Amino acid sequence: MSRILPLVLFVTAACDAGAKPTPPPPVPVPSVAAVKPPVPPAPHIPPPPAPPVSPPPVAVSEHVLLASIDRGPCYGTCPSYTLTVYRDGKVEYVGKDFVKNKGKASGTVTAAQLAALDKLFTDGKYLAYKSSYESYDATDAPSAKTAYRPLGATTTKTVGHYYGDMHAPASLSDLEEGFDKIVKTERWIGTEAERDKLNGR
Image 1 (tube, rainbow, N blue to C red):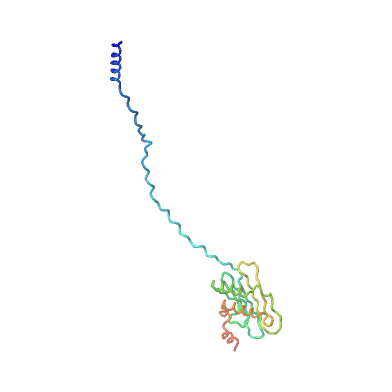
Image 2 (tube, rainbow, N blue to C red):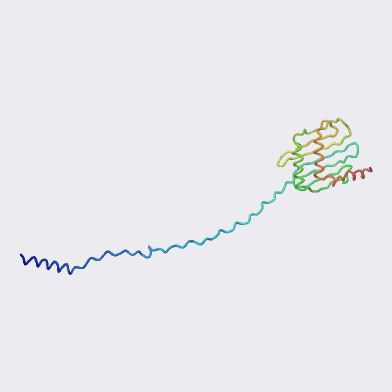
């Protein structure tokens, strides 16, 4: 029994001496596909410049009535004529009696004059006037018939004015004179001095 035990120990030791050590587990190596190089930032590309903004088209005014005045005769040398102004700036004139230019003529007014006419009629509260001030309180007086069509309106307001009507508001006469001044009616009917010369005064 004593001889067997040393032999077993010897064999066991010999076996242990010839056993190979267990290698450590291999370290995983990442595949080439798994390793991605860093992506460089995209270069900054400025946005394309905005196209130039073209100005809006200029609105063309229609050839519709803005205002008109028709001055009638009197017992004397009152100038008699008709003057019509349209919103596109065109002016039509018809000279009748005691004026420098008789017959038809045409002309133009500026945008500022068109605006001044609108202001004249709106500030003068033209739409509030009655349609007629034509009582014959006095005779042989001249007359004037005016018309005004506000911007965008579909109807035209007219006012008949006989200067012998003592109940007619004085502001209506002022408005009629203002019309002639803005349009510069004297370029057709002549100045007062020119008309006096024509009439032999």
